[in-house]
Amino acid sequence: MEVETFKRVLRELAEREPAFLRDIFLEALRGDGRAAEQLAELLIRHPEVRARLAEAIASSIAIPLNVATRQDIEALRQWAETQFTATRQEIDNLRQWTETQLQDIKEKMATKEDLKRVEDKMATKEQFEALAVSVEESGRDWVQFFLEQRGFRCTADRLQIDGFYEFDVYCNAGVLTAVGEAKVRAGGRDVEKVFQRVQSLARGWPEKISGRPVPTLYTYIAEPSARQKAKELKIWLIENRREITTLEEVLEAGYAHST
Image 1: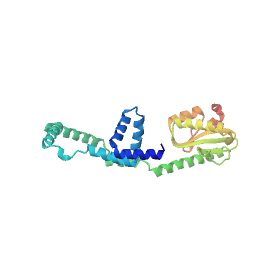
Image 2: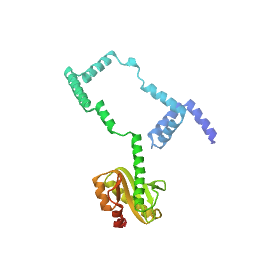
Image 3: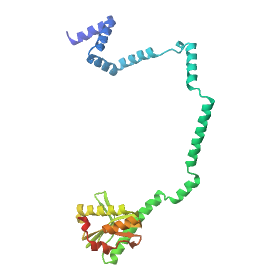
Image 4: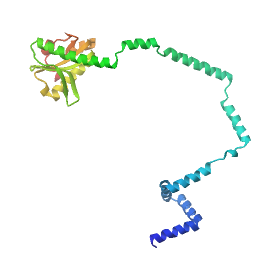
């Protein structure tokens, strides 16, 4: 039988014997599941079938409001009262607990005076950024100044490599290269980071280092841990216009730590 003829026969059968086709579908759903999956896919994908299916489901689950009798509604009201009615004592307890919690929150909240004191002590974002730029510029100026005092001529600048590896201070004087960071406040960990980063620079970009590498850290405030660590690692530590560890100490120690 040709496909078109078969399709025509199925359409005529669907019109004359809808119950027969319904039984075929039900048998398919009760079968091994493969036919059921195909029918489910048809129902999901076909817009017209989806619409009629939704209409049938909606009509089957919609319950008219007048189905509920007065007795049903009264029973529901009584159940709700037994479930949700709180005694006066319970309400008073809840009110007292709420007031206690609110008072505790109020005591912990910052007052306007507290916020004003914090605001007075905090720098704005713009002030902080200006301070960061200032310490970098100050660090480059003082490094260049101290080197020139000792006869080493160079121009201190920022060093950036491959767009991401950056040093705040870089001064290549030929026989030595001072390179490092500038921090508003420096601790021991900052000194260690400068030491490690200069080591990486010397290994990865040796052409950037002329002569003796001098790991350098300039800061406005050097914490005790920074002073101690700088002396241990022989880092040139400059705190706001004065040398904590001198350039001579660093040069005398050589660069044995880098191996």
